[in-house]
Length: 451
Image 1: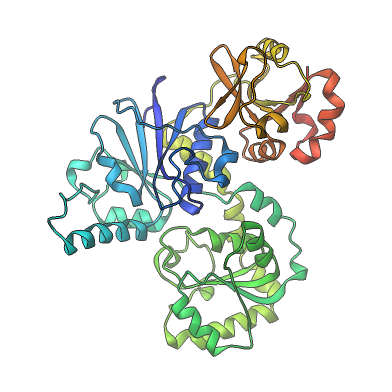
Image 2: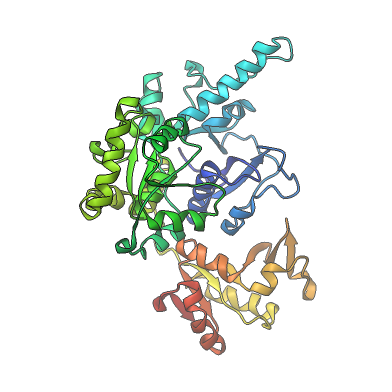
């Protein structure tokens, strides 16, 4: 899809909701900002927790993605809609549209809920327009997160010219922690998600009560990874509506993954494990699955090595995601692009002098952020001539009508891993302090510029 100099891209996302789908939508926005596109999140109510004044879930604030409270319905602009919100494709005919298939099941469940409502009371209101593979919708572009989704939409009439593969990736913090897991310390534990295929999983628990089964329930992401780092096996007999995250998190954490054969698990690409680790969820397979688990316990090293291809695929996902997004927009890297940088000032630095100095180095680097815990965490900070401004609870340095966000060191470390920050810049008299911060930021020495 063509991007014009004045194109604005709006990504529709549930607000105040932390789950796999919204995380992928924020990953996309972050990638588009790396490509210097004009992108905005547009949040919709997902549940009673929706806060119209602050719709950004706390988990995603670290991405520092701008959000819009309205969408400019112009023909050069683009709206990206997850498959679960297909009604939003029809708010205006004057904007270019992309439907992103992250979960086939979510699409079907959403349609069922719409039809169920009208079955109960057909006269309650008019039927809304939703995507249903109508030929009149041939101008909609389709992105697929999995081979499973691609097969589904092709089977229903979407042609290759309308389709782009845009997959996702595990966040870099998870991958970094996973790289330090010592598999020699693995224990005879089977981790499972009680939300996914639990009716069948319950049968396994009853057949083999002697096995140490550990549910992933009411855990932070860090606690989930701690469990997966200990477990030798992760099982998932859910519907696999797309390339689910937890099987990948388990594999990259050193678990052997056992799945059913539903949805995305049925093909060899979305879950790239040997067929000997995939079982139909029938009662006849209960004992064979238990025996497979016990074989993994006894011969863990051999079984672990059989997942090598899957783990390599997961590690390559961030680069593949970037490639997919660039291909979808026919993006070409500009020549002599200055690196994206974050400035490391002293907390007591004179921000007016800082503002003057930054403009001198625009060919050497482009300052995207200013790292300063004190200003980033305080609300409503005002300094000389309102050079620091507060917008939507975030503080910015205002320079010639441009706003540069203040971020914390923790956010800077995250954005550095995501490559939204490529270089850190410090003045000569702050070099010692900047180098002392390098460990906390995860910074390579070559990525520090002293001016």
